[in-house]
Image 1: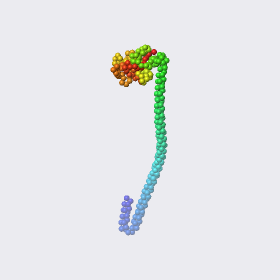
Image 2 (image 1 turned 135 degrees about the horizontal axis):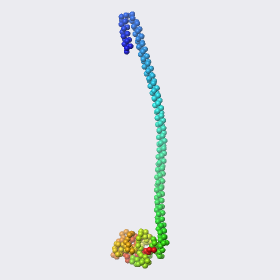
Image 3 (image 1 turned 180 degrees about the vertical axis):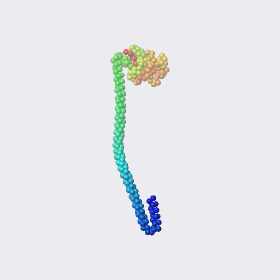
Image 4 (image 1 turned 180 degrees about the horizontal axis):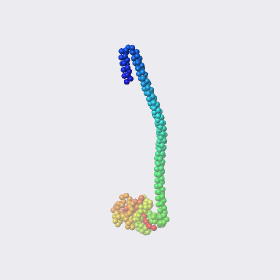
Length: 278
């Protein structure tokens, strides 16, 4: 700015000199041209310096950006490799998971099949055990019977059971006559003390027969007692019994099929069972 002002002042001075002194006109014109050329040269140099400076800055920035770009490309390449490795591992995991799932399915199916087979086998074993238990019970019963038969010597025609002999008649009598028959044999009409004894007696009761027991309520209706005076501790009455049907009344106890008891008219003729302790 100062330079331009200075040039303007000199140009004005030259113009004044030309007006005053025409002989100096040529010198001022030459001086003015030289000043203008110098200014243009300086402007050109400044422009060149600016261009060079700008080019240097751009070049430096380009190098820096190129370096950063290489770094970014390297990082991208590394990330790409990591992604590929991760995808590969995922595929391997998926394959292993699919294989494990198939193995689990196979094992589950096999387990269910084995469990079903074991359940069926266990059922068969339980059934066999129950059968063996029944056989064992029968054998034990036979052993007891044999032991009783060996240890208990009964008269001919009498059956042993738990150290007691029993006589099952083949004819019929009234309850009173049957009682007297047993007394004559050194025994008495049977008195049932246990469920096992009742079950033993029922094994020899024919479906069409009834056998007198040593049981009566002749002294007091409804108060059933054994011949030894004891009251009932066990009861095996048939359905609806005792019912004391008829004008004569049913005051004597008898045993029918399946070991069931029935009250009957004492004068009626039935088979009977005598009992004798040994």
